[in-house]
Picture 1 (spheres, rainbow, N blue to C red):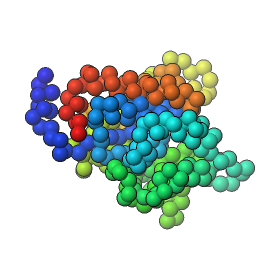
Picture 2: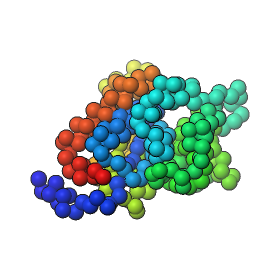
Picture 3: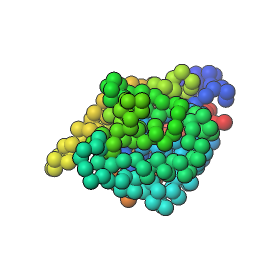
Picture 4: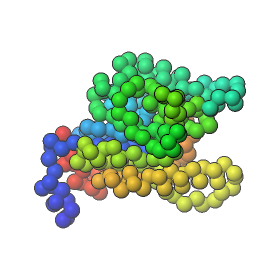
Length: 274
């Protein structure tokens, strides 16, 4: 009770709350369930930070779309399968097998102002600057460009060229970009949809590849995870993988259930209510 008591005395409704959403492909649909549970408990983050799928979900939430709005978008195939967001190119001469025309068009259609500054909530997007081999936090400019960059899986999507600098998926070097929230937020909630789970078996080469990528992402998430006052870990990864786009409803439920359970176990979160 000591921790809860201290939090009660130091918490203020005027303090700002940040929400950091990890990357994770289809596993990122759990973020929508997390957002729904937070809303059901009247916990409304002021700042959103995200990488890859976390950046996509975070962008629509920052623009004012509710979790139910996003579920409807998925049902309409706008955020359903990765093939819906990819336009394959017939050549290996480009920097990726696919461009971002569909994702950019979706953002331009659903968020016509296409601007960080006009969003209803403050938004930070994590990208990787390949020129400098560093991750960066972006919070101004054209939304469609930077969301596309943050979700630009190396070798699959084309890199985004901005001022002669190439940018790709933020999850490559920082899958939990909570660092940019520290300056503005007194409390940070983190959601990591790729928590470390030791592999049980590696029967196929793809299993080894997937486990290796996940290990890399978990390793580069340590700093961001440590910054978070609260850390929610939906475990959809135990049953599904990053390309299980058809299971969006089940993955959503993992996020909702994990968050609801976490709030019950950490009731001090309720003092973040607006």
